[in-house]
Amino acid sequence: MIMIAAFILGAAVGWGRAAKRGGNRADKLQYALAHGMALAVLGLFLTVLVSRLG
Image (cartoon, rainbow, N blue to C red):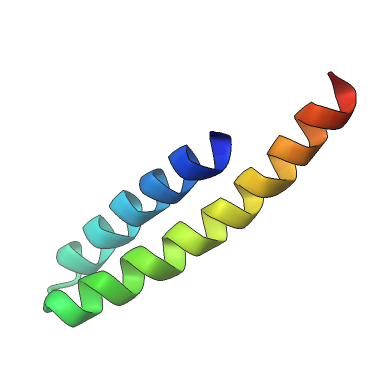
């Protein structure tokens, strides 16, 4: 669940950054996917950490 939330949060941040820089739809999608995947990986590590400690 943490991973899904992290992906959605990353995608929203990426979309916002591309929009702020004046990007078109393709730019926004690329930023959203890149940020989403990066935060999803961090979310995966966090999920594994919580699972091992709990």
